[in-house]
Length: 425
Image 1 (spheres, rainbow, N blue to C red):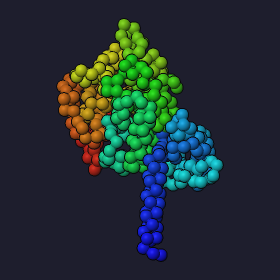
Image 2: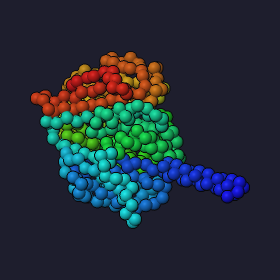
Image 3: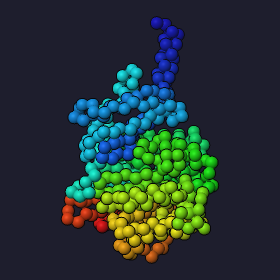
Image 4: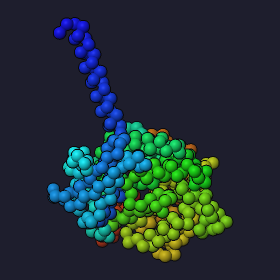
Protein backbone atom coordinates (compact mmCIF):
# COMPACT_ATOMS: atom_id res chain seq x y z
CA UNK A 1 0.00 0.00 0.00
CA UNK A 2 1.48 3.39 -1.03
CA UNK A 3 1.73 6.33 1.36
CA UNK A 4 -1.30 8.17 -0.07
CA UNK A 5 -3.61 5.14 0.17
CA UNK A 6 -2.31 4.37 3.68
CA UNK A 7 -3.14 7.92 4.76
CA UNK A 8 -6.66 7.60 3.30
CA UNK A 9 -7.16 4.27 5.06
CA UNK A 10 -6.04 5.67 8.41
CA UNK A 11 -8.34 8.70 8.06
CA UNK A 12 -11.36 6.50 7.18
CA UNK A 13 -10.51 4.07 10.01
CA UNK A 14 -10.16 6.92 12.50
CA UNK A 15 -13.47 8.44 11.42
CA UNK A 16 -15.08 5.04 11.83
CA UNK A 17 -13.81 4.76 15.39
CA UNK A 18 -15.08 8.24 16.18
CA UNK A 19 -18.49 7.37 14.72
CA UNK A 20 -18.66 4.15 16.73
CA UNK A 21 -17.64 5.99 19.88
CA UNK A 22 -20.21 8.70 19.29
CA UNK A 23 -22.97 6.16 18.71
CA UNK A 24 -21.93 4.29 21.85
CA UNK A 25 -21.92 7.48 23.91
CA UNK A 26 -25.24 8.57 22.42
CA UNK A 27 -26.85 5.25 23.29
CA UNK A 28 -25.42 5.35 26.80
CA UNK A 29 -26.93 8.80 27.27
CA UNK A 30 -30.34 7.42 26.28
CA UNK A 31 -30.41 4.58 28.83
CA UNK A 32 -32.10 5.04 32.20
CA UNK A 33 -32.35 2.24 34.72
CA UNK A 34 -33.31 -0.36 35.38
CA UNK A 35 -34.74 1.18 38.53
CA UNK A 36 -36.61 -0.62 41.30
CA UNK A 37 -39.41 1.57 42.65
CA UNK A 38 -42.23 0.77 45.03
CA UNK A 39 -41.97 -2.70 46.55
CA UNK A 40 -44.51 -4.07 49.01
CA UNK A 41 -45.07 -7.58 50.34
CA UNK A 42 -46.55 -9.07 47.15
CA UNK A 43 -45.73 -6.66 44.31
CA UNK A 44 -42.98 -4.55 42.80
CA UNK A 45 -42.76 -1.64 40.33
CA UNK A 46 -39.78 -1.17 38.01
CA UNK A 47 -38.86 1.04 35.07
CA UNK A 48 -36.33 0.85 32.24
CA UNK A 49 -35.50 3.06 29.26
CA UNK A 50 -33.17 1.14 26.91
CA UNK A 51 -32.97 3.87 24.25
CA UNK A 52 -34.74 6.87 22.77
CA UNK A 53 -36.90 4.57 20.66
CA UNK A 54 -39.84 2.28 21.19
CA UNK A 55 -38.92 -1.29 22.13
CA UNK A 56 -41.14 -4.15 23.30
CA UNK A 57 -39.63 -5.44 26.54
CA UNK A 58 -40.18 -8.43 28.77
CA UNK A 59 -39.31 -8.44 32.47
CA UNK A 60 -38.75 -11.86 34.02
CA UNK A 61 -38.70 -12.24 37.81
CA UNK A 62 -36.67 -15.20 39.07
CA UNK A 63 -36.65 -17.08 42.34
CA UNK A 64 -33.83 -19.59 42.87
CA UNK A 65 -32.99 -19.33 39.19
CA UNK A 66 -36.51 -20.10 37.95
CA UNK A 67 -38.83 -17.63 36.25
CA UNK A 68 -41.91 -17.10 38.46
CA UNK A 69 -43.46 -14.01 36.85
CA UNK A 70 -43.21 -12.26 33.49
CA UNK A 71 -44.49 -8.83 32.45
CA UNK A 72 -44.28 -7.14 29.06
CA UNK A 73 -44.18 -3.38 28.51
CA UNK A 74 -43.37 -0.92 25.75
CA UNK A 75 -42.35 2.63 26.49
CA UNK A 76 -43.75 4.85 23.77
CA UNK A 77 -42.93 8.40 22.78
CA UNK A 78 -45.68 9.75 25.06
CA UNK A 79 -43.81 8.18 28.00
CA UNK A 80 -40.38 9.35 26.81
CA UNK A 81 -39.73 5.70 25.88
CA UNK A 82 -39.72 4.64 29.55
CA UNK A 83 -41.22 1.18 30.05
CA UNK A 84 -42.97 0.49 33.35
CA UNK A 85 -43.36 -2.98 34.86
CA UNK A 86 -45.88 -3.86 37.57
CA UNK A 87 -45.22 -7.31 39.01
CA UNK A 88 -47.80 -9.06 41.21
CA UNK A 89 -48.24 -12.47 42.87
CA UNK A 90 -44.96 -12.30 44.78
CA UNK A 91 -44.21 -13.77 48.20
CA UNK A 92 -43.52 -11.57 51.25
CA UNK A 93 -39.98 -11.23 52.61
CA UNK A 94 -38.46 -12.94 49.57
CA UNK A 95 -35.37 -12.10 47.52
CA UNK A 96 -35.89 -12.04 43.75
CA UNK A 97 -33.69 -11.40 40.73
CA UNK A 98 -34.92 -9.93 37.47
CA UNK A 99 -33.96 -10.00 33.80
CA UNK A 100 -35.08 -7.74 30.94
CA UNK A 101 -35.16 -8.98 27.33
CA UNK A 102 -36.22 -7.49 24.03
CA UNK A 103 -39.58 -9.21 23.57
CA UNK A 104 -39.13 -9.56 19.80
CA UNK A 105 -35.47 -10.46 19.35
CA UNK A 106 -35.08 -12.20 22.74
CA UNK A 107 -31.84 -10.27 23.22
CA UNK A 108 -31.02 -10.01 26.93
CA UNK A 109 -30.59 -6.36 27.87
CA UNK A 110 -30.36 -6.74 31.67
CA UNK A 111 -29.01 -9.93 33.20
CA UNK A 112 -30.46 -11.56 36.31
CA UNK A 113 -27.66 -11.15 38.82
CA UNK A 114 -27.29 -9.70 42.31
CA UNK A 115 -26.97 -6.16 40.93
CA UNK A 116 -30.46 -6.61 39.45
CA UNK A 117 -32.58 -7.82 42.34
CA UNK A 118 -35.10 -6.73 44.96
CA UNK A 119 -36.53 -7.97 48.25
CA UNK A 120 -40.25 -7.88 48.98
CA UNK A 121 -41.45 -6.29 52.20
CA UNK A 122 -42.04 -8.20 55.40
CA UNK A 123 -45.27 -6.88 56.90
CA UNK A 124 -44.52 -8.31 60.35
CA UNK A 125 -45.01 -5.59 62.96
CA UNK A 126 -42.34 -7.03 65.26
CA UNK A 127 -39.34 -9.40 65.34
CA UNK A 128 -37.61 -7.66 62.43
CA UNK A 129 -35.74 -4.46 61.62
CA UNK A 130 -36.10 -2.13 58.64
CA UNK A 131 -33.78 0.69 57.52
CA UNK A 132 -34.78 3.61 55.29
CA UNK A 133 -32.60 6.40 53.88
CA UNK A 134 -33.76 9.97 53.16
CA UNK A 135 -32.05 12.71 51.16
CA UNK A 136 -33.14 16.05 49.69
CA UNK A 137 -31.56 18.85 47.67
CA UNK A 138 -29.27 16.84 45.38
CA UNK A 139 -27.79 18.20 42.17
CA UNK A 140 -26.56 16.33 39.11
CA UNK A 141 -22.96 16.01 40.20
CA UNK A 142 -20.78 13.41 41.90
CA UNK A 143 -21.24 12.92 45.63
CA UNK A 144 -20.46 10.22 48.13
CA UNK A 145 -24.01 9.68 49.40
CA UNK A 146 -25.16 6.96 46.99
CA UNK A 147 -22.15 4.73 47.65
CA UNK A 148 -22.54 5.27 51.38
CA UNK A 149 -26.22 4.34 51.19
CA UNK A 150 -25.37 1.20 49.28
CA UNK A 151 -22.90 0.16 51.97
CA UNK A 152 -25.67 0.46 54.59
CA UNK A 153 -27.88 -2.14 52.85
CA UNK A 154 -31.01 -0.01 53.14
CA UNK A 155 -34.48 -1.41 52.54
CA UNK A 156 -35.62 1.77 50.78
CA UNK A 157 -34.15 5.06 49.54
CA UNK A 158 -36.35 8.17 49.62
CA UNK A 159 -35.72 11.13 47.30
CA UNK A 160 -37.37 13.95 49.22
CA UNK A 161 -37.55 16.75 46.68
CA UNK A 162 -35.21 19.04 44.77
CA UNK A 163 -33.99 15.68 43.48
CA UNK A 164 -32.98 16.99 41.03
CA UNK A 165 -33.08 20.75 40.50
CA UNK A 166 -35.14 21.43 37.37
CA UNK A 167 -36.68 24.94 37.65
CA UNK A 168 -38.60 24.83 34.41
CA UNK A 169 -41.95 23.54 33.20
CA UNK A 170 -40.68 22.78 29.69
CA UNK A 171 -41.44 19.06 29.35
CA UNK A 172 -38.37 18.23 27.25
CA UNK A 173 -36.08 19.91 29.77
CA UNK A 174 -37.91 18.34 32.73
CA UNK A 175 -37.41 14.88 31.27
CA UNK A 176 -33.79 15.59 30.38
CA UNK A 177 -32.99 16.60 33.95
CA UNK A 178 -34.67 13.49 35.37
CA UNK A 179 -32.71 11.31 32.94
CA UNK A 180 -29.39 12.88 33.81
CA UNK A 181 -30.14 12.57 37.52
CA UNK A 182 -30.96 8.86 37.37
CA UNK A 183 -28.00 8.24 35.05
CA UNK A 184 -25.48 9.26 37.71
CA UNK A 185 -23.48 6.00 38.00
CA UNK A 186 -23.60 5.57 41.77
CA UNK A 187 -27.32 6.34 41.97
CA UNK A 188 -28.02 4.06 39.00
CA UNK A 189 -26.15 1.23 40.71
CA UNK A 190 -28.02 1.80 43.98
CA UNK A 191 -31.51 2.02 42.45
CA UNK A 192 -31.05 -1.14 40.37
CA UNK A 193 -31.47 -3.24 43.53
CA UNK A 194 -32.80 -0.90 46.24
CA UNK A 195 -36.36 0.44 46.10
CA UNK A 196 -36.00 4.14 45.23
CA UNK A 197 -39.07 6.34 45.67
CA UNK A 198 -40.03 9.77 46.96
CA UNK A 199 -41.84 13.04 46.40
CA UNK A 200 -40.98 16.46 45.02
CA UNK A 201 -40.33 19.95 46.34
CA UNK A 202 -40.33 23.33 44.62
CA UNK A 203 -37.36 22.99 42.25
CA UNK A 204 -38.45 19.67 40.74
CA UNK A 205 -42.05 20.92 40.86
CA UNK A 206 -40.86 23.66 38.52
CA UNK A 207 -40.10 26.91 40.34
CA UNK A 208 -38.57 28.18 43.55
CA UNK A 209 -41.39 28.79 46.05
CA UNK A 210 -43.76 27.24 43.52
CA UNK A 211 -47.33 26.31 44.41
CA UNK A 212 -50.32 24.85 42.65
CA UNK A 213 -51.69 28.25 41.69
CA UNK A 214 -48.59 30.04 40.37
CA UNK A 215 -47.73 26.90 38.35
CA UNK A 216 -51.33 26.09 37.41
CA UNK A 217 -50.47 25.31 33.77
CA UNK A 218 -46.85 24.18 34.03
CA UNK A 219 -47.44 21.64 36.81
CA UNK A 220 -49.18 19.33 34.35
CA UNK A 221 -45.90 18.80 32.49
CA UNK A 222 -43.66 18.74 35.55
CA UNK A 223 -45.89 16.01 36.97
CA UNK A 224 -45.77 14.17 33.66
CA UNK A 225 -41.96 14.15 33.71
CA UNK A 226 -41.91 13.09 37.37
CA UNK A 227 -44.30 10.20 36.68
CA UNK A 228 -42.22 9.11 33.69
CA UNK A 229 -39.11 8.70 35.83
CA UNK A 230 -40.51 7.25 39.05
CA UNK A 231 -41.81 3.72 39.50
CA UNK A 232 -44.43 4.25 42.20
CA UNK A 233 -47.50 2.16 42.91
CA UNK A 234 -49.51 5.41 43.20
CA UNK A 235 -49.21 8.97 41.94
CA UNK A 236 -51.67 11.09 43.90
CA UNK A 237 -55.23 10.76 42.62
CA UNK A 238 -54.01 9.06 39.45
CA UNK A 239 -54.48 12.31 37.52
CA UNK A 240 -53.18 14.95 39.92
CA UNK A 241 -50.51 15.17 42.59
CA UNK A 242 -47.78 12.65 43.46
CA UNK A 243 -48.58 11.59 47.06
CA UNK A 244 -48.30 7.90 48.02
CA UNK A 245 -47.10 5.71 50.89
CA UNK A 246 -44.86 2.71 51.54
CA UNK A 247 -45.56 0.12 54.23
CA UNK A 248 -42.49 -1.88 55.25
CA UNK A 249 -44.00 -3.54 58.31
CA UNK A 250 -42.11 -1.90 61.14
CA UNK A 251 -42.25 1.51 59.47
CA UNK A 252 -44.68 3.21 57.11
CA UNK A 253 -43.69 6.34 55.17
CA UNK A 254 -46.35 8.76 53.93
CA UNK A 255 -44.91 10.79 51.04
CA UNK A 256 -46.91 14.01 51.05
CA UNK A 257 -47.31 16.48 48.18
CA UNK A 258 -47.48 20.07 49.51
CA UNK A 259 -47.10 21.59 46.03
CA UNK A 260 -49.60 20.44 43.40
CA UNK A 261 -52.83 21.37 45.22
CA UNK A 262 -51.57 24.28 47.32
CA UNK A 263 -53.44 27.57 46.92
CA UNK A 264 -55.93 26.00 44.47
CA UNK A 265 -59.02 25.61 46.70
CA UNK A 266 -60.28 26.37 50.22
CA UNK A 267 -58.75 24.33 53.00
CA UNK A 268 -60.77 21.31 54.12
CA UNK A 269 -60.23 22.40 57.73
CA UNK A 270 -60.88 26.15 57.31
CA UNK A 271 -62.77 27.36 54.24
CA UNK A 272 -61.54 30.92 54.83
CA UNK A 273 -57.94 29.82 54.19
CA UNK A 274 -56.23 28.37 51.08
CA UNK A 275 -55.35 24.69 51.19
CA UNK A 276 -51.93 23.10 51.16
CA UNK A 277 -52.79 19.44 50.58
CA UNK A 278 -56.16 19.71 48.84
CA UNK A 279 -59.33 17.89 49.87
CA UNK A 280 -58.58 14.55 48.18
CA UNK A 281 -55.05 14.25 49.59
CA UNK A 282 -56.36 15.34 52.99
CA UNK A 283 -58.96 12.57 53.09
CA UNK A 284 -56.40 10.05 51.80
CA UNK A 285 -53.87 10.98 54.48
CA UNK A 286 -56.31 10.76 57.37
CA UNK A 287 -57.73 7.44 56.17
CA UNK A 288 -54.28 5.86 55.65
CA UNK A 289 -52.91 7.23 58.92
CA UNK A 290 -55.87 5.89 60.89
CA UNK A 291 -55.53 2.51 59.19
CA UNK A 292 -51.77 2.17 59.65
CA UNK A 293 -50.61 -0.76 61.76
CA UNK A 294 -46.92 0.11 61.60
CA UNK A 295 -45.26 0.84 64.98
CA UNK A 296 -43.60 3.90 63.40
CA UNK A 297 -45.22 6.30 60.93
CA UNK A 298 -43.24 8.97 59.05
CA UNK A 299 -45.04 12.04 57.68
CA UNK A 300 -42.53 13.06 55.02
CA UNK A 301 -42.48 16.03 52.67
CA UNK A 302 -39.92 18.12 50.85
CA UNK A 303 -40.73 21.32 52.74
CA UNK A 304 -40.39 21.82 56.50
CA UNK A 305 -43.06 21.69 59.20
CA UNK A 306 -42.04 25.01 60.83
CA UNK A 307 -41.58 28.63 59.76
CA UNK A 308 -38.56 29.14 57.49
CA UNK A 309 -38.51 32.77 58.68
CA UNK A 310 -37.72 34.22 55.29
CA UNK A 311 -39.86 35.79 52.56
CA UNK A 312 -40.89 32.44 51.06
CA UNK A 313 -44.24 30.84 51.87
CA UNK A 314 -43.52 27.18 51.10
CA UNK A 315 -43.48 25.77 54.60
CA UNK A 316 -46.15 24.20 56.79
CA UNK A 317 -46.22 27.25 59.06
CA UNK A 318 -47.93 29.03 56.14
CA UNK A 319 -50.64 26.36 56.36
CA UNK A 320 -50.57 26.05 60.16
CA UNK A 321 -54.29 25.25 60.32
CA UNK A 322 -53.84 22.06 58.25
CA UNK A 323 -50.62 21.15 60.06
CA UNK A 324 -52.26 21.60 63.46
CA UNK A 325 -55.36 19.71 62.37
CA UNK A 326 -53.19 16.70 61.50
CA UNK A 327 -51.51 16.89 64.90
CA UNK A 328 -54.88 17.13 66.62
CA UNK A 329 -56.16 14.01 64.85
CA UNK A 330 -53.02 12.12 65.93
CA UNK A 331 -53.49 13.24 69.52
CA UNK A 332 -57.26 12.87 69.82
CA UNK A 333 -57.33 9.46 68.14
CA UNK A 334 -54.27 8.10 69.98
CA UNK A 335 -52.28 7.36 66.84
CA UNK A 336 -48.86 6.39 68.15
CA UNK A 337 -45.37 6.29 66.66
CA UNK A 338 -45.60 9.36 64.41
CA UNK A 339 -42.50 11.37 63.46
CA UNK A 340 -42.07 14.25 61.02
CA UNK A 341 -39.55 14.63 58.21
CA UNK A 342 -38.73 17.60 55.97
CA UNK A 343 -35.96 19.00 53.78
CA UNK A 344 -35.59 22.05 51.52
CA UNK A 345 -33.61 24.52 53.67
CA UNK A 346 -29.98 23.38 53.12
CA UNK A 347 -29.55 22.83 56.85
CA UNK A 348 -29.99 19.65 58.90
CA UNK A 349 -32.04 20.05 62.09
CA UNK A 350 -33.65 17.99 64.83
CA UNK A 351 -36.58 19.44 66.75
CA UNK A 352 -38.76 17.96 69.47
CA UNK A 353 -42.23 19.44 70.00
CA UNK A 354 -42.99 18.43 73.62
CA UNK A 355 -46.21 16.45 74.10
CA UNK A 356 -47.73 17.99 70.96
CA UNK A 357 -49.56 14.80 69.98
CA UNK A 358 -49.86 13.27 73.45
CA UNK A 359 -46.17 12.41 73.28
CA UNK A 360 -43.02 14.21 72.15
CA UNK A 361 -43.18 14.77 68.39
CA UNK A 362 -39.76 14.40 66.80
CA UNK A 363 -39.15 16.49 63.70
CA UNK A 364 -36.20 15.65 61.43
CA UNK A 365 -35.00 18.05 58.72
CA UNK A 366 -32.47 16.54 56.30
CA UNK A 367 -30.77 18.85 53.81
CA UNK A 368 -28.68 19.35 51.71
CA UNK A 369 -27.40 16.40 49.69
CA UNK A 370 -25.10 18.76 47.82
CA UNK A 371 -22.59 21.17 49.39
CA UNK A 372 -24.44 24.49 49.13
CA UNK A 373 -25.65 25.38 52.62
CA UNK A 374 -27.79 28.33 53.79
CA UNK A 375 -26.65 29.45 57.22
CA UNK A 376 -29.41 32.09 57.38
CA UNK A 377 -32.05 29.35 57.57
CA UNK A 378 -30.54 27.81 60.70
CA UNK A 379 -32.92 29.94 62.77
CA UNK A 380 -34.01 29.85 66.40
CA UNK A 381 -36.95 27.66 67.34
CA UNK A 382 -38.00 26.77 70.89
CA UNK A 383 -38.18 23.09 69.92
CA UNK A 384 -34.73 22.99 68.31
CA UNK A 385 -32.41 20.36 69.79
CA UNK A 386 -29.59 20.28 67.21
CA UNK A 387 -28.57 21.58 63.80
CA UNK A 388 -25.67 21.26 61.37
CA UNK A 389 -24.87 23.56 58.46
CA UNK A 390 -22.82 21.23 56.26
CA UNK A 391 -23.25 19.54 52.90
CA UNK A 392 -23.55 15.92 51.72
CA UNK A 393 -26.00 15.03 54.47
CA UNK A 394 -28.60 12.27 54.56
CA UNK A 395 -30.71 10.60 57.24
CA UNK A 396 -31.42 6.98 58.08
CA UNK A 397 -34.31 5.69 60.15
CA UNK A 398 -34.04 2.15 61.51
CA UNK A 399 -37.17 0.61 63.02
CA UNK A 400 -36.24 -2.36 65.19
CA UNK A 401 -38.86 -4.74 66.58
CA UNK A 402 -36.52 -7.46 67.75
CA UNK A 403 -36.70 -6.39 71.41
CA UNK A 404 -39.54 -6.07 73.91
CA UNK A 405 -40.09 -2.41 73.04
CA UNK A 406 -39.83 -1.30 69.38
CA UNK A 407 -37.23 1.40 68.75
CA UNK A 408 -36.69 3.93 65.99
CA UNK A 409 -33.10 5.09 65.57
CA UNK A 410 -32.43 8.23 63.52
CA UNK A 411 -28.91 8.96 62.31
CA UNK A 412 -27.83 12.16 60.58
CA UNK A 413 -25.05 10.91 58.34
CA UNK A 414 -22.40 11.92 55.82
CA UNK A 415 -20.18 9.77 53.59
CA UNK A 416 -17.19 7.86 54.98
CA UNK A 417 -19.23 6.46 57.84
CA UNK A 418 -19.70 9.79 59.62
CA UNK A 419 -22.64 9.90 62.05
CA UNK A 420 -23.23 13.47 63.21
CA UNK A 421 -26.21 12.79 65.46
CA UNK A 422 -27.99 9.68 66.70
CA UNK A 423 -31.45 9.71 68.27
CA UNK A 424 -33.23 6.64 69.64
CA UNK A 425 -36.99 6.71 70.24
